[in-house]
Structures are given as C-alpha cells and as structure tokens.
Amino acid sequence: MQQSYKAPQDKEFEACKASAAGSLAFRPHSRSELATKLVDKGYDKATIDRALSRLQELGLQSDVDFVTIFARSKWRQSRWAPSRIRIELVRKGVNKKDIEHGLREVFGTDSHKLHMHTEDLEEDEDGMGESHRLDLQLLETAQRQAHLTKGMPSETRRRRMVGWLQRRGHSWDTISSVLSELAL
Image (cartoon, rainbow, N blue to C red; front, side, top):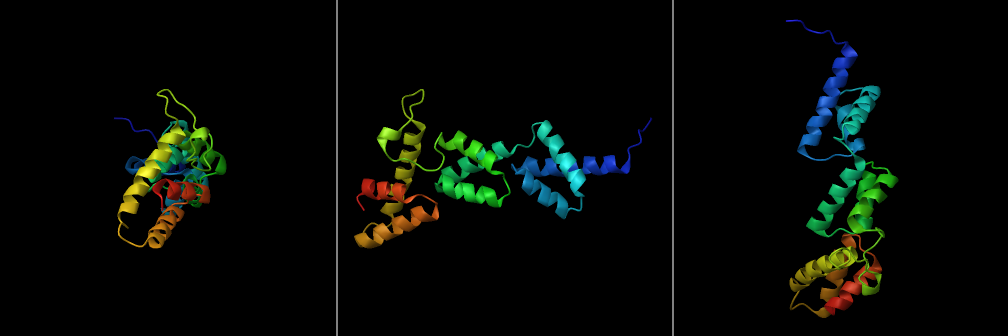
C-alpha cells in the first residue's frame, strides 16, 4: 500500500475545509460566521480563505442561499419584517449585495417593506401576488396575536399590537394597515 505525502499546509487546508463542511452539515452559515468559527479553532486567515472559497466553488456554501434560508425561516417563525432580517444579516457579516439579492428572492422586488395595499400587488402564476400572500400571512398572525388581548381595553390592545409589530421591524405604514384591518 502506497501512501502519498501531503505537505503540512495541505493537511491544514483539508482539516479546515472539513471543519467548515461539518458546520454546514448542521445548518447553513454565512461565510463570515464560518470564518469566525475557523479562526476560533486556530486556523490562519489564508487557509480559511482558501477553504471557504473551495466550499463556495463546490456549491456547499453561498451567502445568497444563506440569506434566503434565514429570511424564510425568520418570516415563517416570527413574521420578521425585511428590515429586521436585513439588520440581523449585517450583524452576521453578510455583504449588502448578497442580502438584497436573497431578500428579493423571498419578499419580491420591493424587499424593504410589506405593502398591505391591493394596488401594489404583483401577480404570479396562480393569480395571487407574492406581496399579497405575505400580507395575508402577517394579518393572520396578527389576528391570533390580537385574540390574546381580547377583553383588554382597546388602547392596551392597540399598544401591544404596535409593540409586537415594531419588535419584528415592520414599518409604520404596515403597522397602520394592520391596525386598520384589525379595527384596533
């Protein structure tokens, strides 16, 4: 059995790449998150850069894919607004171009806000615009949230709904539309 000799830097590169791939096996990560993890494990910057570039070449890591998955998850689980998602992605070290591209995939062409107005809707194949679908999802969740405050004074209900929507990063236009739809 013949073994091939690998230079120490090749072994370090392979170990670094394997460590990053292992992290990606658990959940998607941004390039910046992976780099931070690898620095913490003691790999040098040049090796990290080579390993992460190789993973991107292989299609195992993409910041745009990470943004898309992260945005869909935050929308589905917590109804975070695009602005709140954008802030969190910047904190995670994703560049603005990748953030905007990924958010457009999830929220459509205007990824800065939800519309809540039927005249702004874009139609897709089934006749219902993506903006309309997102608006309906937000309204449905807001109705469930409003139900929790049933029996409280109307000003308290309104204040709690405003706070709930603000914590999720929704614009005042969206908040006003939700309050109007829910008659709060």
